[in-house]
Image (tube, rainbow, N blue to C red; front, top):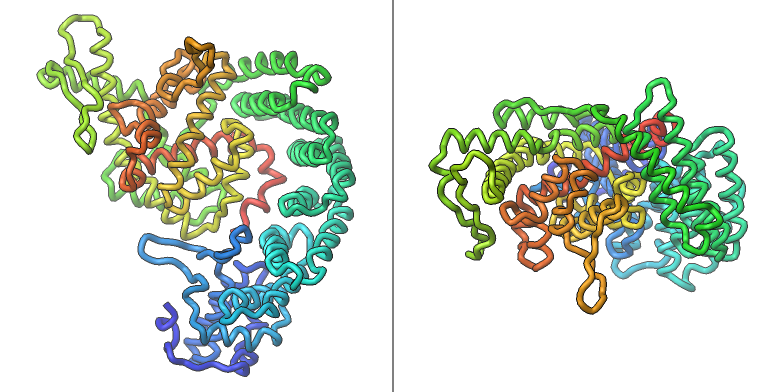
Length: 625
């Protein structure tokens, strides 16, 4: 990789580092953070090479490569990931750097007076040095914790740097001295001084303490401060931030433990959704679809309140009231949602359009376009097409057909069509088989023409993390609140094109999502056996319930059934559950489409729910590219 930019055997010195102009390059960046530093240093490196300053160019390229890596503080063994991965190449990771490169970093670290760069170089030397020198780990910790605990720094990388410092201190144990205690004290002080003007900083710092097992002695104070900020935001009408702070306060009160206050905060979160639903319905440009999603969120939050506290907050009565509002908004929301349609042209044009639709856009806009590359299957259109083909070629429909699996098992039988005027039960089975056959062709075209080319552009232009997908799932009204982490992991795995991991995580959670929404609609999702034991029904049984189309609509219900639990289709749920889905099956067009469909559902429901919040609260956090 590097010998394409400078001679492989080019020797550089500490003086080359001093004279390279790295300080001037970094000083020209408009914002802090490794992404901006990488862009500035790589640009300076190209200029140096073009000017014939090869030694300076190599220095700058090494620094740019070091800054290009994505920090993953949750992984002690592989804390640095490539920022871009393609099917045949990727960007730099620590293993690409030679021993000479690491020795060069070790030689110049003490001359670096930029905390971002010093932390990164020290961390790489600690990680790759042979033998390991704890002195570099300590330098990395000290540089990381020198970064300010303010909103701007946090958004541009501080949210990863501080956890990495804490992880290194824990790894060194006594060798880190009292650094861990000092960092805990610094975070607590920063949290105590956070104000409403700092936006989400209070939540971020509280989560930093909680996720690292710190701040135990300050639980009550943290919970009270979060509640106070929540009420301030609520009073000024900032419902989104108020909700987030109430939710964080509920978690900290629960950790004290104070179940009474935790339930009070949870009820405040639910009522925050109700307030936003009312506001959305009464705005100048009302959206009953968005309001319905807010009511659904409120109901889901109310359901998490422990039974012992439900009477205090009138939970059961409130859920009944909210369901009435939900149904009313749902009826009024028909036809509100627009579609992004792919032109019906040849595959070359489809690929080009797919790439253009996501190119050069912000993260949210690119994901919006990606999630709506294809409008989704239309069950009625597929049925009409199948019936028309059967009429045009009747002989094909007069004979039964057998569907076999890749290992030779008979997995389904399509009956012959009858000659009677009215459709029989067997006729409907035959029609469904033809619909799913057409659906399979459609899925293959969509994956190859739309999803895959657009995903390559997304990976090239945006650096999304697992935490981004988890946050997306957490705010999506269709995702059960306690499954956001698993859905986030699954969506991120698919985003990284690891569909083996994505499917194994995603499919059980889709079944759970289906069960939760059907149960909330009053459907009977379990059966009682002869011994009086209740067993939850599988997805095939769930999708056959009459409530399935009422809850998910005809089109989505058809896709869920066809993808996951119909023997005429890929039957992904049952294939995976019985260990029949091999690695190739996990990378099939059906598997990739299943991941994309889950992302589409998660993102679009979040998009509708968050449209109001986007105008003022989430933009800078989510668009850090």
